[in-house]
Length: 210
Image (cartoon, rainbow, N blue to C red; front, side, top):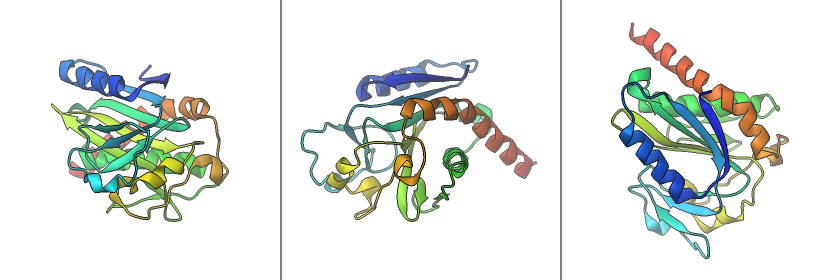
């Protein structure tokens, strides 16, 4: 099995575990996808501008090593961490981002939700509102961090920040759009699709180069 549902886990220990996995993996280490949700936390990317944190209040604020600005994780949000050797797979960072976006776009289409990505701002959007965010780190040819899909959560904490550094950006979630509201059920549906989606993107990239 290339994916694991971890349930609700604390942010910092999970982040450190991703780093350790990436730093200790060998050329033969199998790729794995972690699917989970976190307790409430704001995270800031390496070059994030702290002015985009308007009022963290009682929610922890953690400076981390992914790209991007500030985002929020909390119960009711499905987080997908692909711990993948993209160099071995033949994926570029941009290819990985687009594959993760397309995974969500294709999934929500099954519920009649029309979603799209944006070249200028990674993530998945529905009628201008952000449904999913993407933030990655690549080290030694392998990636960690990943994608956060809003399923059925309290969206109020997003009003305490400029999500992804975009003032006034509205956010939405699956349950409000007529999709499912059970994070674990969404994880079980998406989990088996993640690795094939990345492999398909890599195969398509290989055909373009050949």
